Amino acid sequence: MINLLEATVSVPTLPMVWFILVAVLWLGYFFLEGFDYGVAMLIPVLGKNDKDKRVIVNTIGPVWDGNEVWLLTAGGAMFAAFPGWYASLFSGLYVPLLLVLVGLILRGVAFEYRSKHPDTRYRAMLDWFATVGSFLPSLVFGVGFANFVIGLANDGLHWNGSFWGLFGPFALLGGVMLVTLFLVHGSAFIALKTKGHIHERAEAFGSKAGWAATAMVALFVICQNVFWPANSEFGNFTVVAWAAGILSIAAILGATLLIRGGRDGWGFILTGSSVVTLFVGIFLKMYGNLGFAQDEAVAVDERLNIITAASSDTTLTIMTWAAVIFVPIVIGYQSWSYWVFSRRISTKNIPDEVDVAA
Image 1 (cartoon, rainbow, N blue to C red):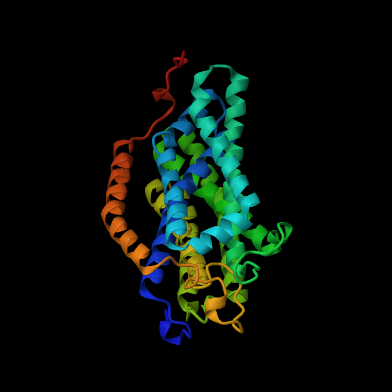
Image 2: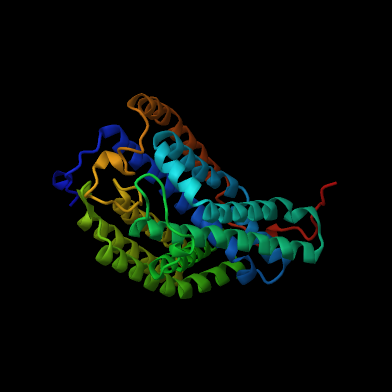
């Protein structure tokens, strides 16, 4: 159970609430953008010709840029609620974050300009932009959050580790695991949104790659909870972190079996559930320490953590009221957009000729 009574450090209510809200925003981002990344990485795998690739791109065409809003919102919430956390991460880890930015730019350019010219080589180049632009953020986020589980080296205020030190065995496992999990998540979405031979290819890929994803998620969860349990001066979350990890393993295993049996809807729900519960376990480990190693011999107010990194109560109170008003509106609008574009598509829905913009 979550046992805050065992915590030796009392966290004020507002920073606790905003850590949970920031975590929810990241969970939403990885659930939604996870299948976007997976779909884009599968363009050269499942698309055998231009029509196939256009169908694959069109599955996320109406929603991919809206899903990115969750990343901007999560970053903005970190900036406003925990400026110390934001400043330390975004200044110290600017190289990995630059790689994420490059990937997002490549992917955005690919989706926006692919239909502007009919040349085969031009479109092939942009397809690889989309693939690489989705692979890079997936890999970097996997490596990054694995390092948050371990705890980033710091001097009490800022990250002071080395760039190459971020690529340890567990971190690399996290990167490969998240890429594989997103691939299965993306294949489940393609299977859900298409019909015909692309649908069949997506199901075949997901039913095979799902076994690899299950093995990697299981290995990641076991290593995380054995070597870096979610137990610190801020609270003991060990049992809940184990439970979240086991649910993640069970979800991706169940998704693999369901995709294999043609149950696309439930398969997609379970791949998404695996992503969400995996990151629930990670954020439980990050509670209090914000992903930074803590020297408990040093006073709490002299090191970087949820208390010292937080904004004032006035700022957090204003932000809370803003979140109460606007977050439901955003969720409602995005849910409506998914409903509007919920129909399946196939190559029959793609015209032979595409009007080229002047």
